[in-house]
Length: 417
Image 1 (cartoon, rainbow, N blue to C red):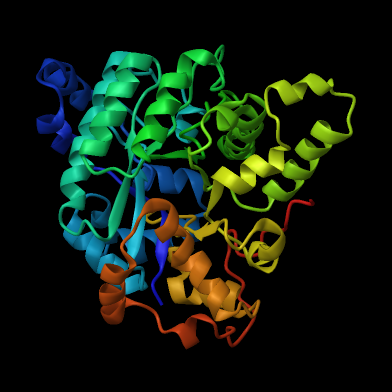
Image 2 (image 1 turned 180 degrees about the horizontal axis):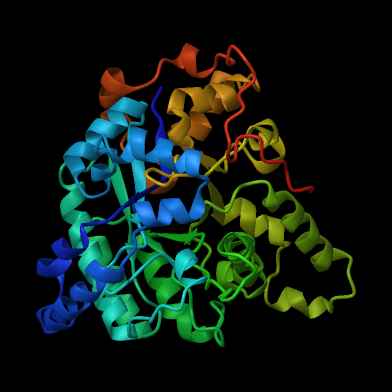
């Protein structure tokens, strides 16, 4: 079975970005490195893990993941290939790991700490450096990875140039960034960005905590309390971009633009579309909404939108027909601690696909077919790799011998439709 993860994260070791930076930013970066070495915290660094996880789980992470060097797969393509083989994952869609130049920590950690922001110019330079670096990372096995470029929308003309540069670097899409609080993605000033993505066939990817601004929760009752509030907000913020893109007319104006919602979970879509269609057809909303979108909201979803279903639950797999078998692309979220890979990819697939008796044809759509269609993976090339490292079909579709009790998202309840 070919497994394409719709959600993987990579980043260089911070000091290794220097040669990829525009020369005029290297002195600023050298100054930043001094502070980063004292205060910087990566998503999977021990400080971050200890902050977020119970002591027994953090100790397990250190023993089973950090100490054996598995986290080298964040920056080393050779180690990444080894880890993919270990997990039976054939290919991945790659995003930045909240560790680009001039970024002191992840947005979710920054939301509960007083950390200075990089300037817009520094942030944009850091994104360009990341895009150049990830192109080199991919060159070790280009058939196995498709990258989502990191860009800023603060300067629209510059963003359009970066979109074209991303295509030249071999990226398959853009990780849509958060825009200033006073602005919205449907505003006409952003149309050249959507037009460029549509023209170049690049996916617009809405990844949680990248595409939406993260509110701050300084002085929460406890750090964990603040993190819980952040955790609720990051999903809501990303999901709310669906009505922005539909009712704001972006998908009507750019009918060939593909939009993927990644790591937002999957079940929320059912209720969101029911409510949006109700507003369109039967609410007190004035009928001139049809001047903006002549079709019901669900038609735009059906035509243009997809789900990077990371981190998926058993309940979501059970509800796949109502969510859309042709919409869901399974994501493992390597190397994040909450990712499905942490329990062993085969174990997690058995506890979801196997436990729910998913037919092979549907499993193939969700595990690789949809991703191949949307992102352009070469399935013939991947089949040759899967013959060596892939999981056995019968094993994937076999229920676990006992009810799985993994901590995390496996048993997350559905959002009601």
